[in-house]
Amino acid sequence: MSQKGAINATVQIVKNGPYKVSGNLPMTRQTISTNAAGESVKWVAGPTIPTPEQYSLCRCGQSASKPFCDGSHKGTGFDGTETARRKPYRDQAKVMRGPAMSLTDAESLCAFARFCDPHGQVWNLVNQTDNPAASKQFVREAGDCPSGRLVAWDNASGLAIEPTFEPSIGLIEDPAKGCSGPVWLRGGVQVIGADGFKYEVRNRATLCRCGASQNKPFCDGTHAAIKFSDKQ
Image 1 (cartoon, rainbow, N blue to C red):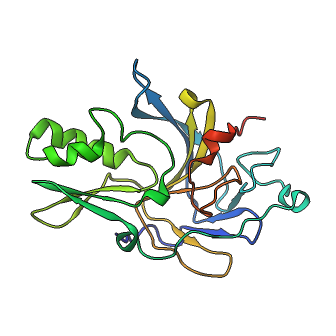
Image 2 (image 1 turned 45 degrees about the vertical axis):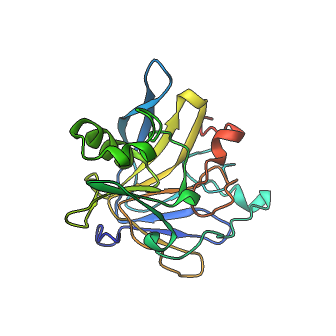
Image 3 (image 1 turned 30 degrees about the vertical axis):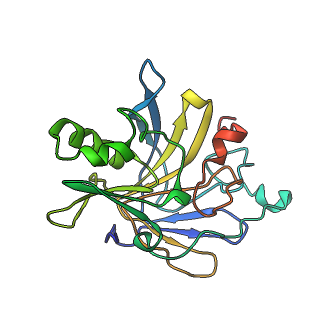
């Protein structure tokens, strides 16, 4: 599940502080678009947000300059202790094997984007992957999961079926739930813990920016429950 990513593209976690982003990573807003039934069906990209080669993103959720850090964490007593498991994804994920493809699922990484729900849910679609239409939906739903909780695998080759991303950052917006979501790392960006630990480099990962996740540094969907917003 590792991905090479961009040379020098890193997110360094500051102890009880922000995410220090290096490597000239472009950043855009990524909005969850829903259908008439309220189901997540499409990502809509906004314009690129101007950034320098290096910048710091708010992790405590209290900055008045969101998404950027303004030092608010220093006065709020923010506890950014990293509590997420540090095992590789494949060691955390459950496997569901279908006729032509399989699904791996690491539930603790869920960012509550809900692309897994349409068409009977991705966990049921895996059992229909010998059907071309169901197979197409299965691959799309697994690939649209921003956190990489869900990954589709081709049984014949044993390879993961991943969307193609250039190394970049997305700031997730979720109008259907009336909230802003996590920092979406795409294309293989190295995350380095406050203690220097290098997390597994993945094609998709979501980092908490509301300050309330119980699975830091990763998002656990709490932003939706607390109606986090990065609007000033």
